[in-house]
Image (cartoon, rainbow, N blue to C red; front, side):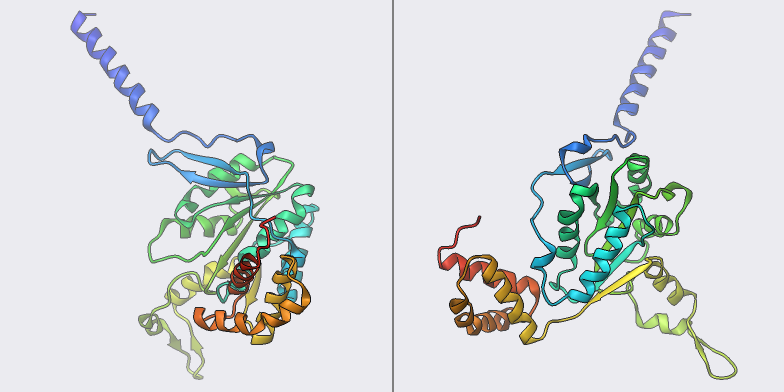
Length: 293
């Protein structure tokens, strides 16, 4: 072998080593004892990693008021899952600020001592779901893959990956993983006026949705359990305000006196939601000097 050829081979091997180092490697398992909640993050290099969330926002099931029917469904499904019984992937939809995400965090708080773990995945990273499922498969813990504020635009890659997972593909055939997602709309793909053109009418006048419409509703239908949330009435909003003020140590007499302020706060925000109620309670309790702990 000539010296020139040896140098050429050596340079080629060095180049291949650099390329291999730059390519995304397989997702590695973290130290699962470090946290109960994890966040999947994609680096600029394309490498994905599971990062521990060491300070999870504390939320208890008893803190969530005026959503008892929704709470019962989500808690029941989560309890079945944690105890090794059959359970469904879950889609929580409806008005913003009504407790969808808080309910999932509360379930984590309730069942983490029983082995429940949560992995938050952004919708842009859902194409990596098979890799995440592969890492947790075989673990004794139960994992909720959680995607907040889920919706897709036409052609987004995460749509097909999530659809495959929900269908129970070979890559997702593991009993210790469920997908929980929240969204402000029931159908996770945008619905446009032109989609109505795909509808057809049978001889007896019955209307049938076309392939475009069927495709747009098919992803939602793959979630086995739907839980809907609705805007709160004034009385429900005030009940939530009272609950939060009480939890922050505000005396009952002052809670009653705070009702007019709470209504003005909601009017200025244009929403009577649980989130707005909590924000008002924080402000009111903070002005009274209530500590954060």
